[in-house]
Image 1 (tube, helix red, strand yellow):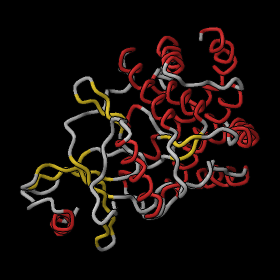
Image 2 (tube, rainbow, N blue to C red; image 1 turned 180 degrees about the horizontal axis):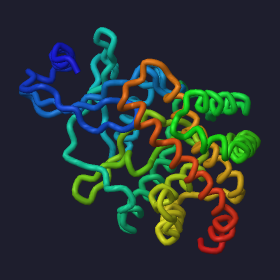
Image 3 (cartoon, helix red, strand yellow; image 1 turned 120 degrees about the vertical axis):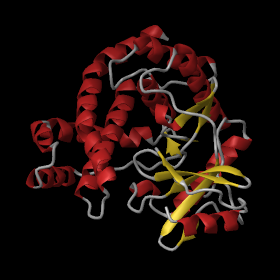
Image 4 (tube, one colour; image 1 turned 90 degrees about the vertical axis):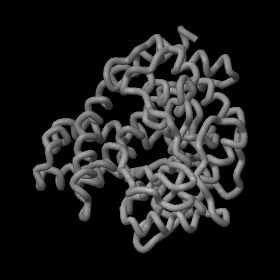
Length: 332
């Protein structure tokens, strides 16, 4: 990040004088994050990636999601709001775009270490987000990413031509991936019947902890989504689905959500097919990133690392669906 950009941001947002060079910190799979110390305090700067997901690839979407985060903060959700100037959150400098936040002395949990007590807190927060039922006239109806099978086949073929590390896995599981995609597309009309404005990406990496208190971050995927799909998807993530599902944590989160006033739909097969579709879309997105030009080596490596585990997780979850469909109604 250029020092001239830091100085410009400080001037525009009234952050004081920069006291040191910015320090790059881990900021997830899409963007670069920086820590900067100024005479007014410490701040986190998100440098937006230039080729992000189709849902969030324009200024209007980023501005809206930051506004939504601020509205949820005002409604009592523990989160962090970006710093605005003239009601705008994105600052453009030359060819770069930035969003600035107050610095939090908080960290995410290590992967697969969340306790029963911690996951209970997350389930209660999700129930509160859904209970708020935030209404925005400027927000469009629920949108679900759809990829036709011919697009998936083209990505598989291109991966093979370029000899990408995951090409053989894609070819091996081609029929499975196409079947999963068909099942997902078929249930989208059902998922759209019941939607609510929510975070939509409340996984472990998007929650930081200040002592024992969770703080929700990264609202950029916020949208209208099916609440039961979000609940079960979130609960799978927090109950270690990428390692081995912890059924105690998984069911506890569902019960906690219900006791806090949340409602679970009964068509669980449709919900699980929706989750599989979202996971498949994430795999497709990362394959596309690997094929894109002007991708940094670090971002390319991160994208590659998502694909093979993503396929394994997809297969594992699909194998669990019959069991979970029987388990959930019996255990709640």
